[in-house]
Amino acid sequence: MAIFYPSKNAGAFFLLSLCVLVSSVCVWGRPATFLQDFHATWSESHIKQIDQGRAIQLTLDPNSGCGFASKVKYMFGRVSMKIKLVPGDSAGTVTAFYMNSDTDSVRDELDFEFLGNRTGQPYTVQTNIYAHGKGDREQRVNLWFDPSADFHTYTIMWNHHHIVFYVDDFPIRVYKNNEARGIPYPKMQAMGVYSTLWEADNWATRVV
Picture 1 (cartoon, rainbow, N blue to C red):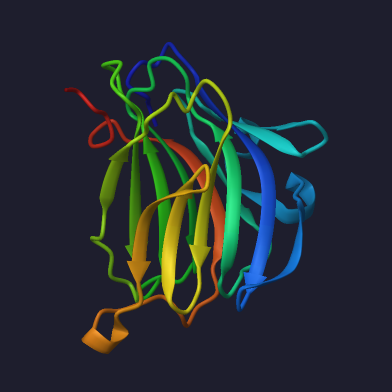
Picture 2: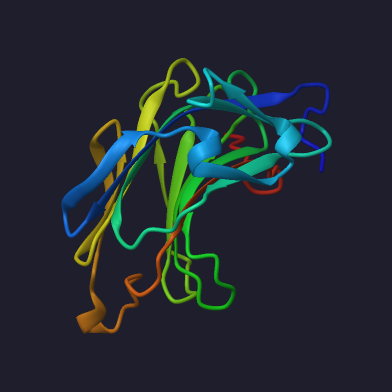
């Protein structure tokens, strides 16, 4: 896999934290560590642990990106990660933080995808929701700050009634349960927490 500017490596930093809720009651919440709560899903050599595993750096180079996932799946909850995104010329990079049921044809998935650019324009965050294998619910928002300058908190809150995507505790998208109108809603499958850094220059780069 090649990035748009192969002479440069790209990196994103994550501070790991999980708070899992069941029926809006916090059953446990604590700082996460990589070895205790997560495992590499591909290119483990591109994942660097920092501060005894309380933070990690993902690296994308001309050979590979990388990714990791939680060891446990959750049925409803609120999951947050503090992320510092790829700095500088981030053309063609996608940093993703998402929940996924890891089932093939009828997967459920809740996505944050951060799309790099090469124009100096704002970073774009794309959210998407898959329910019973059906997606095509993308929405894009331009971030109102430089997400590569410092850590910011990105949160997915998921319950029987709605899904909310937050940036620094500010809701940027609310997706309501409209099953009564025949619209699928993810409520039958537990989902794990995932993150990846990868190259997608064919669609992820902002050019204007």
